[in-house]
Length: 131
Ligand SMILES: Nc1ncnc2c1ncn2[C@@H]1O[C@H](COP(=O)(O)OP(=O)(O)OP(=O)(O)O)[C@@H](O)[C@H]1O
Ligand SMILES: [Mg+2]
Image (cartoon, protein in one colour):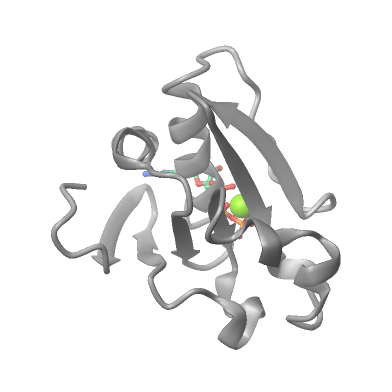
């Protein structure tokens, strides 16, 4: 998951959204940690469970790391500033289903299945981009 995060980090462009799908403990935050630490190795990357959002500056891009598990209604994403950020900054979102139809259609879907320490990941979208 760390390596996949680093790989995704190499192809990011402003305006990208990544939807991380997978159950509790699937490795979504671990992937974001790999992404951020591939640029800033000493950065701590906590789970934004309570803050919902944590932002990072990566090579001129602003990255929004969001954990929407506690979002009760998609409209709350407006108050967080997330709706304005999507399509402008890079947004990597855990529990994207909590956004309902507010999730951009051109988001990269990363679906993580896990069994013990093993992980299987399916990527959907971003045809023509070399992830
Ligand atoms: N191959 C693996 N990839 C990622 N994490 C793994 C792997 N094997 C074991 N783990 C462990 O699984 C846990 C993954 O936690 P992580 O916080 O990344 O999950 P999460 O999907 O963000 O969960 P949550 O939905 O609670 O936010 C960590 O404790 C990590 O050490
Ligand atoms: Mg997490």
